[in-house]
Image (spheres, helix red, strand yellow):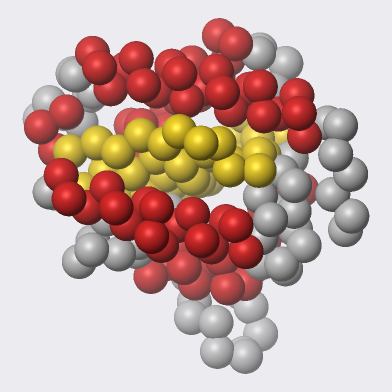
Length: 180
């Protein structure tokens, strides 16, 4: 199975740090999964306005379409997901992610921003009919050191649990046709 770990921002390093840690934990539970981190910071983004898509956006869409599951990482800015992440979802065919497992992780500057995951990101993934795991991990700046390494052991425990549940959802998704 191809799993796309999505760093859904062009700024900062914490979402990438979260994904790299999750990648390690997922490999511990299932080393057969083909994991790839897609860093939005490496892409030339364009606004979805009807003009022809550039090569980076075509490649991004292809990666989403070819993946069998996703771990979406996002910072929370101004009590919302980044525009580049929402814009990416707007480019993806509604059936591309159908019945594929998805886990969510986010980080933000206040503890209250965890609600954005439930109120904004989950409804988008529900629209795509993803198999969204019931657990997500929200982190705060205090969970990282100055080099963006995760230093909070409870966050590590929750990331391990998220990885475990995600791997179980991957097994479940094998039994469900995605009806593309």
